Length: 519
Image (tube, rainbow, N blue to C red; front, side):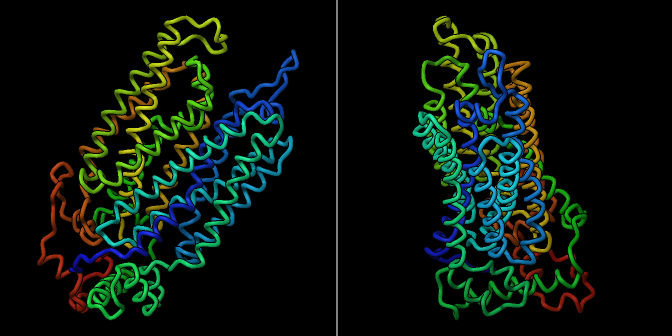
């Protein structure tokens, strides 16, 4: 088994840079403020009989949700490009698609159709990268910091959302289209930075070996682990990976149905990845990200909704930072279980207090009572608390789990299914939320409360602990059949592990190569 070594600074910088490209989280946050900007409403809204313009709930949902529709398609499409173009080539390709989509949005004047088409195209890039980034980082990161590096991915997404709020706070007072064009158009900078930087980053060593480029793979493994190319560690890692890849390839090309195979509990892994993404999207935090400005405008706290949303974004960033520590100390299970409990309490309080104390939508600030204002303060406080907890627990952990749960043979397809699930429910949330809020107001948070209770139960009974395990050991964990609630501290049998990874004569002994799902 490969020994632990000091981690290369290049590995850390590589992961940070890749995650920086995913400041595309900025695109999730930027639309929230645009929905209440006067110039944006005048250009893409509808005119009332008194000459005032407004954005109906249906138009809001279309504008917001078309990005998510694109992300769903992109998450599936990347499974084809990540093998054909390589992980690095795919990141280049989809970054370019994202940049084109942003340009289409920024260039629109009064066309709602052009705006939503641009958001759909940008969504293709966002969705594909949401799958490729954890795939790439999971395949390049040394195991000692793999969880931390994958958390950086979430830190950068949340940082992007926060930056979008900051720029909108500064631009919303402009009395022309620059109020929304500037924050939207700025996304092109992130795309261009990622496009240019990817030319200097290496391909995944697992992909290089899988395509017969062994010399390049050895060089990358040495770089990322901070050792010379002739170090025994490099030979050991490359030998294990090369053997596993060859054994897997002898079994034929992987299919989508194979992701749900009973062999090596692949169906459980795929379902766990998809379910965690599904539950994550219905934690409630994305409701605040997408519609927070509109929601807080009705809370009557006396502050600009842009200021409240900026505070919310800052709290999200600070909430994600502790996850860099907790993901490797608490572990995956404990983070998810504690996060579900704490968020459920927050969602319940927001629902009950909001429903019983907030004034009806459209009530002038001067008409708010002391009870209305106090209720608004409570709603905002617990919304911020919930977003903080999400950033520490459910924000990064499902992505970490997704990046480390699958064997190389089916990894691109399984991660694609997990990412597509994330974006499908993101689309459903963004499309239906305005309509639901129109009918039941803050009680929408009861939906998220119920999902968090379900999430706690699901994690307890279905999600095993993978902290501190190599990708190969995760494979054996699932094959061992150990109950998830007893998996904390599990370690593989040394004898079994050594036999599976190093017995190069396995095919000659009559074993089916497809039974070897070394990662």
